[in-house]
Image (tube, rainbow, N blue to C red; front, side, top):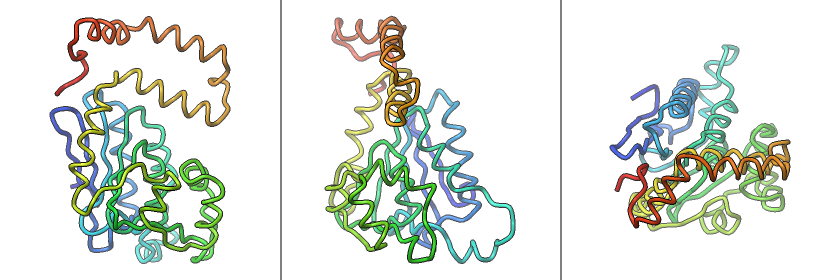
Length: 254
């Protein structure tokens, strides 16, 4: 355990980060933010880690910021929560969030930063910052990319709760499962992402982000260059050989 989170890496290279402050519905404090930032920084450079699962212990995924803890530490230097979001969002490896119970405020931003989100049918969500008196400015780009503008206007302006069915409809969540079914539901997703070549996955995530931002890396000429280089890579040679020989590629562990 590291200051509010649990870490585990299985033999296939799937790292599981479990938010572990169930007594406060996994609300985050500064210690948890530091632990998350350090964990994701480590995943970025650890070649043994192929994918990351983010989940919460107990009844809820996360109730967002621990306002009581924040009040007690007011005036002290704290880690910017946006730094944690950046490290999750830019990780060059697949990330999967598993949601049960409440997913509120910063919790919604965390899952919006992940590549795949699976939620129990009874889960619920909220972006309540305006009710506390402020605009969640740094998180809005992630909310916007996950929910879209029309849905975000409603939920960010009202702060109201919305259910898993609505989250699925608006693409904040990709898949629903019955209560207690998260582990079963995530199995095929993890198997699928582990079949992808690590370098190709990292490059695909980077190019998706570049296209979404409209950066220079998304220029047609740059994309063509990336494509040509990628098709000549060692991973591409191995992938084509595995397809011809009807075997698993070297990077996949059953």
